[in-house]
Image (cartoon, rainbow, N blue to C red; front, side, top):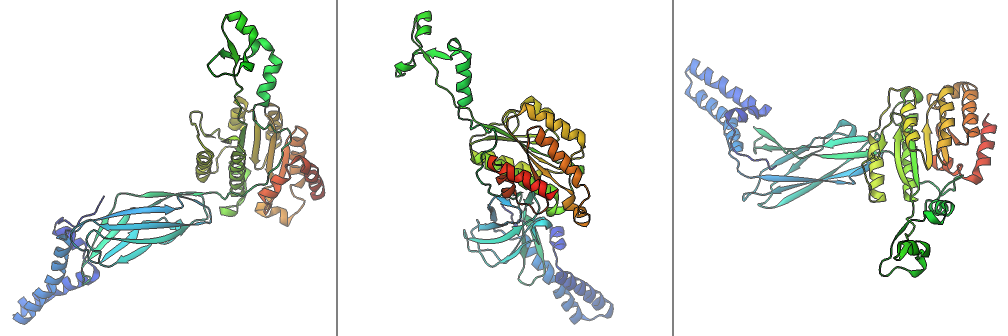
Amino acid sequence: MAPSGSPSGLRTGLAGLTTRGRSFLAAGVTAVLCALLLGQDALLRVGVLLMALPLAAALLLLRTRYRVASGRRLSPHRATAGQEARVHLRVDNVSRVPTGLLQLEDKVPYVLGPRPRFVLDRIEPHGHREVSYRVRSDLRGQYPLGPLQLRLSDPFGMCELTRAFAASDVLTVVPRVQALPEVRLRGEWSGQGESHTRTIALAGDDDVILREYRHGDDLRRVHWKSTARYGELMVRREEQPQKARATVLLDTREIGHRGTGPASSFEWAVSCAASVGVHLMERGYEVRLLTDTGRCVPGPDGGVNSVAEASGMLLDALALVDLSEGGSLSRGEEALRAGGEGLLVAVLGTLDEGQTARLARLRRRTGTAVAFLIDTETWSGLRMLAPDTGGAEIRARIRQLREAGWTVLPARAGDSVPELWRAADRAGSASTAHREEADA
């Protein structure tokens, strides 16, 4: 939309009078009244002049005929929490006359900083001006930018009219993603078709998937037994490599986390889930994000064509995820029972004995299972004041999950996600257990 300076009535012009313009108008009215009461013609002329200046300025702005258009570009379009993003604005004069003084103001949420304001001098016909400003947020989320407001003013500062563009953009602030080291998880499957090959071998020769011979097929793949049965050449179908699947379960229960703001245990959990999810995607996994509420990303009907697209969907979902009011992980557990094959990485807050027991039983329905078990008391400061408080309880949860076959990584305030992930390596399991015994 291109704002226009076409006339819209005297009322609009009077509403746009500045403090200076209103003062001149009030002074002129007062002078005219006094001149009429006192019979002073000179004072009457002064009053008329004072009234005419702001009215003439308003009329001049209302009759302005030039038109301008704007555009906005974000760099980057998806920013990381704590990272600055730059917003580029472009204003084009699409009319045949030069513009006057233009004041730009972009509408920005207070979380991203103060509203940027710019003053542009004369723009030649069919010319343009470009300005930019920076925004930054430590909080995840999606923040609207715009619409851009354009203020027109006269040379004497008597009147200002505001025109707003309709277009706006959205800046997505995603959680921090940390690069994780390459590890070999216990029982991990590479997902390159080995399981499929073993299944065919165990099923027997009669269960081999076949199709008709096509020109160019390798004769070594001809299945002679089926060829004799059907009377035409039949070949073994090529094995379709299976892609390894992984599920990242994020505990969003409000009662399971401590702390507030960017330094809370929940924000650490979100960043951990983002780091693990992106890392697994880069390794070739088909990753889905699952929360305790049962929400799954991508959904059952959402096909993803590339790693970049899948990572973007995951990060966009984590940018908007919030604490839930639920007290259990039951909905997430139901989703895992429905399709819990492959690698499972759970980022868990505080668990009670019943929840831990259900997760322990759930391990039998999945492949490799890794749990980041957050010691939330270290985020509230209670553990620093009383080191023995709650220590025995979390150690019992760790032991219970490990006995069920989980690889458990205890997470405390200040712990590094890459270091914890390195401990998930089969070679690092012993060191993890040793560290836990030492901390006990």
